[in-house]
Length: 419
Ligand SMILES: Cc1cc2nc3c(=O)[nH]c(=O)nc-3n(C[C@H](O)[C@H](O)[C@H](O)COP(=O)(O)OP(=O)(O)OC[C@H]3O[C@@H](n4cnc5c(N)ncnc54)[C@H](O)[C@@H]3O)c2cc1C
Image 1 (tube, helix red, strand yellow):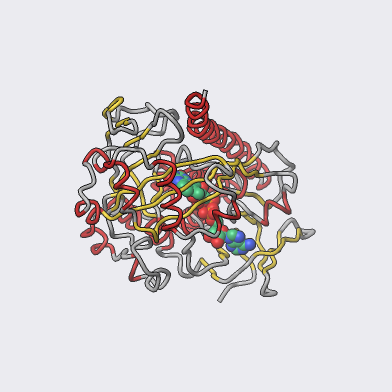
Image 2: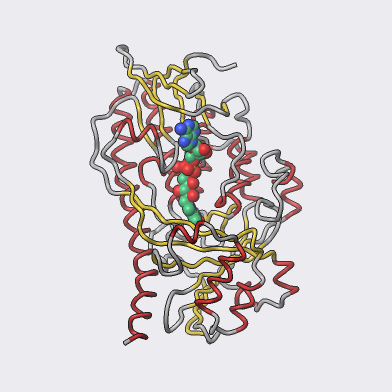
């Protein structure tokens, strides 16, 4: 039973919205989450998220002890060594992971990855009375007393002192609150796929592709990133976090949504129309996408091609990569935003999910300060928005630069080869 008034109403039960709900509940703030889908089975949900220190810090602060321990015990292990190869499978360089080689100061956990399914299970724990499914937010209305009413497509509504839009890149809350904020198609198309480590052993995939984070940098054309995600199945049993026991995934065929399978996976990125037009790509099955990729890289070394050839086609799809434009602060209201809803970014620096979780960690103490009467609510929200916009814009820039470097260097090599 949903009461008709809460202190904080959150739209969206993704990593950001659920971390916020955990933190507010832990600190005695009356919160409700309104999520449109009971099951989360979009394609990327079958992959892992690389987790960074900023994400971990926020989870430590906001989760109760038991779910945090479950999160740590079920983290996937990625290799902690990097290797750079060319298309002939020759080593161009190797480095043991040594701190901040990739950029931001908190990028110190290259080996930590979390199944999105597991992260969702952990973040939902203890929130049965907080998360309400099947609630599609449509619009909000500001009330004369400063409170906000959120309306849902089923005709229901909720009154809240604060409304938080954590409703992802296509946020309806943002469209109403900051209609001039824009996201854009970067023109980059990303293709990825997975193979279980069991299958990798059967197909004798090289240890260089299993025990390292391998970057393939060909003399011509676009590269390939390869890494793996190893899970401790015993820990999954201990904490009861088996994805396939979950109604959300149990009827979906293939291993894509199985969070207890260790796998190796790869991704590559091309520019729009390089592989085929978007319309043509959208019609291709996983195995047709693999064939298309093979037609581009068929001259690569067999050790590399085996990884693509034996990839499970049910785990392959093409994604359009989007980013957002920086936005100036707006007059603060009792409606605010977090995560992809305001700073969606490319996947290239593994920052989007971590930033959403981090935003939650910034907002909780501000809302607590307001509740204690240490500062007025609007001042607390404004302080949150200033910090969130600053770090969010930095992350968006970093991930866009990394994408441009990665994809444009492929184009440069292509042009050089053609000259
Ligand atoms: C290919 C790829 C790889 C990535 N890899 C990484 C990585 O390694 N590390 C990392 O940190 N990030 C990564 N990201 C980014 C990460 O997935 C996102 O930044 C993160 O999911 C954002 O979390 P969020 O909670 O803000 O929004 P979302 O995860 O988008 O959640 C929004 C929620 O709101 C709900 N919702 C939407 N509209 C409504 C509505 N009208 N009413 C009610 N509910 C609604 C949705 O159903 C959803 O549950 C990657 C992204 C991609 C595409």
